[in-house]
Amino acid sequence: MDSKIIFSKTVKGEEEAHGKTPLLFGDIKRALLMVDGAAAFGEISKRSAPSLRSVLDEMFEELEKGGFIQDKAKIANIPRIVVPAKMAVPPEKPAVNSASGLDFTAVSRAPSSEMLASASLASCA
Image (cartoon, rainbow, N blue to C red; front, side, top):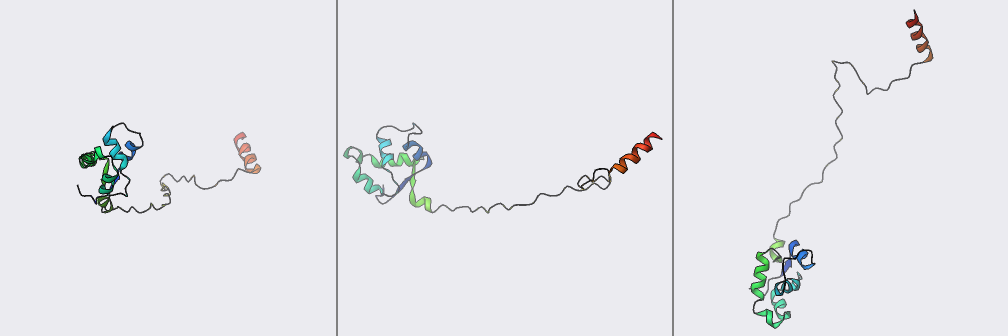
């Protein structure tokens, strides 16, 4: 494995490192915990325990295939999709049905006392 590759944890790797998922255990989890997104593989190899150095490259390959880590250089080359912000659109006014002739959007006045008196006289006659 190239000693200059810088790995970073994926979302799956972060969840595993913080103990949210129990997918890895033992030496391979220790290898995952050494990934910090800044140190190259060669530096991590030097810092690791002597018993891990001989198999560290295999562990990193397994972590990469499992989706726990990824090459940081490949992340930077992924194109980002720009989504424009939604524009506020005023609601449409309902269409007035001219066939019925009813318009409930107009403000109406309460009947005056004269109107009520004349209506009651008309009903009595």
